[in-house]
Image (cartoon, rainbow, N blue to C red; front, side, top):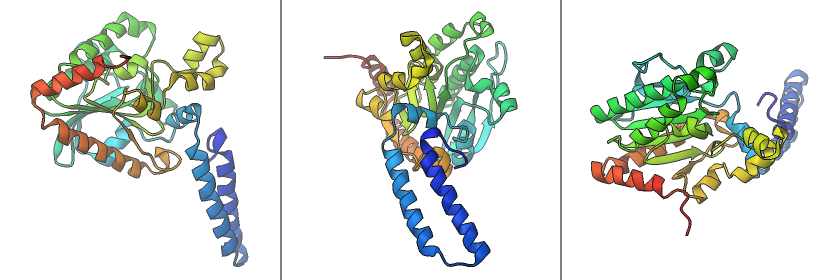
Length: 316
């Protein structure tokens, strides 16, 4: 677990203690297997207690974990024959959004998603997963291509938000996202979206108008980041944990409110602890939803998608 997050320190310390004890056993040739077993049982209980009672802010921290799998990781684990496609045919190729045809099981998809970097160089290249207008225009162009070739669309969402820089605004950031919202409602093929990490505001929704929206257990989906919310409401970014609580941004809260369709379970401690298991859970959800969606007529599909989003926020 390396150093872990702040709330994981007791778990990390016990893991280190177990590793040190195992090293001592090897070096000194002393049988302390019973002590190791006792500590490992204690560790298992500690992990379950720690991760069963996470606060919303702690889940946000896990969602942002630098070792968490990103879009390209899931594509490589889940899919074959990935052919990346580039450009918005207007300005440039935005590397914060990756997209292309790929095969999952026996079904060919148009797959796309936000992509963050693992180090400073790649983060600069990917703009920390914050897309420019050309990223959203590329996504829409390729969704329309998927419609032309009758291929369902699989979307991975993982962004703090759309890039708010001057250049992005000059090139029509708000208009690009708004156009996607309008046009995605009418894309005549099934769309499944998975929030795999951060689901920040319009930057997430710009590729998130889907028939089925699923969120990984420790991911979040919100109109604003906790830090941004705290800065606006209380003029104090340090109150981000309070903001995370009131925003109701966790997968469980979103499911209760009818914003999403499913919470996809993660391995204990987060997707980065067992990426392959997390990928398998995503595959199960995607294939289950696609099987149901492809059985619908185009008229039924589009009508249900429209009603799904129109119903959000409606109270009795």
